[in-house]
Length: 254
Length: 374
Ligand SMILES: Nc1ncnc2c1ncn2[C@@H]1O[C@H](COP(=O)(O)OP(=O)(O)OP(=O)(O)O)[C@@H](O)[C@H]1O
Ligand SMILES: [Mg+2]
Image (cartoon, each protein chain N blue to C red):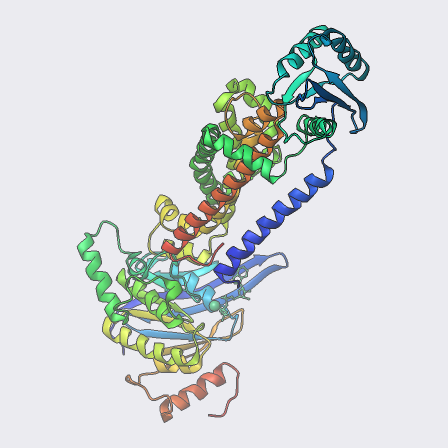
């Protein structure tokens, strides 16, 4: 059994939105446990409530029922200890790469130390030489790297990733998966990734939870202990994918 | 996309077209000049001159020889007097100095005294031909056109430019430009200093935006010109009243646009900032303001444009400087060439101000990696 401490503990999380037509139940009793340093993926069809779940875990949305605790403390508001990387690029266009990465670092930090932190994460995501470039001159993949560097620079305990590759082209997407694995192996942050891409989840995560259409619950949780780098065409991953597709209600020959 | 050089050329072409149109309209609408009845003499020759009187449409009213010999002087003086009495000329074309000219002058002087001096003498030199009456007729015609009465009318581009150059040369124009620009700068500066923080506050706090909007939306439709009496009463006319009106003209657009820009700042930027623990004043300074900056700069440009329109109107009351004052003052002197010269200046300065603000806007946005707006 896993000896690591439990970082995130969600029990019976319920969330609904009120609109003109009435109440939309989005999350309907979600249970999730994530251990320290674990990489968990949540897959689900589009519109099932993945972003909503992350917003709740990060403290951006109030939940209507259940509990969410991080390190044993209930989550009430957002905190730099758990950073959410948004589905669409949210780096600030008016700041250059270095300034974006330094954004969350406390202004009480000595400038020299800020500079060193920025440099460390610039190097980690491979953006050396682009420190003074503004986002409008960066490619989609580079913007994504800035986003990770900015999140990591505040040394959070938990990283929430909301479909981080959604806006990227297929090639860049493959490249960024490797990048994420590399970053995760080097930093060993606790990561929760949501995606509708089963292959992505299989390649990245230690554990994969499958969400149903909303009102959403988890229908299956699959453990994926394969070491990195993983061969996407290996027999283990093929079996895993088959099981996930079945859980999602999509029959597919692989 | 048009190349910059083509664009500059097309801009100039547009201005040329404007000048052409102006010239055509003025020439077509200008009323005909009114000709005065003119008396004229030929150059004295052999002790006599030819006397001609032309009427208001250039018709010959009289053509007679006049002797300047001493013995005949008195009776000839009476003849001249009779002609003048009959034809009532108001200008007289005199030949340049020549022998016998003094006699002519003293005869005329006698008549003028009798008529109360209503005869304006104009010296017109002409090559004297063999026919002295032809010379006198030519002189009368030239006198008429030189002293024709032109009704006050719109100047054409040349006349306006001449007035413009004249006022520019004697420093008058610069004084008025400085006065107007100063008022706009003061009014707009005040509007930005108050409007941007107000807009930030209205945009940030929902409970503030409803009452603020209620106030702004009923004050905004009131033209700054309608505030003129109130401003004069409150500030006693002068610079302060004008600056107040410009402030009003710029304050509402700046405040409303800033508030709108703040409310439309993308939620993901706010959430990112909050996620990193950036809140309150820091959030406004580091995220809201830069995110709203493109819209704020556009609002500034529009406000400066409005302010420039309003300053001219504001200067038509209670101040003694500025381009608006210049327009009114020139009108009161019936100097329409100056009126139009002032209008040209207003247009040109307005154009330059807009170009300058656009430039600053572009530089600011580029410096902040936000190029591509405006
Ligand atoms: N603020 C809101 N108000 C009302 N309904 C909302 C709100 N946010 C989300 N929803 C609804 O909740 C459901 C889940 O939305 P969510 O964005 O979490 O889906 P998602 O799984 O992230 O989708 P995608 O894969 O397209 O990103 C949707 O039906 C959506 O319409
Ligand atoms: Mg989503």
